[in-house]
Length: 82
Image: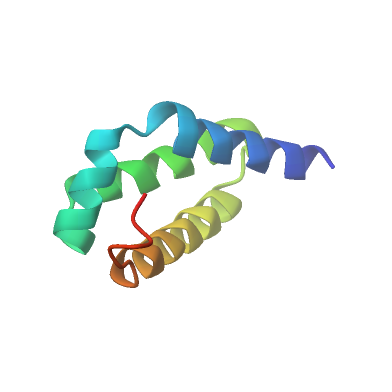
């Protein structure tokens, strides 16, 4: 239960508190080449490492977060933009 709450807290902090609109716009325009996308993924890995203290879980979270964000970015249309 503590692991799930820690992962949820890291996700909320990384996606809704730390990430700015500028980062989102850059990710949408530059896609995988966006430095802000990579910074965002590293922030998630760092937050998970800080809260969970497991590099294995941090790497898994970073990789899956990157994959999900890229899927959303590359499959985005004008009607589904945030």
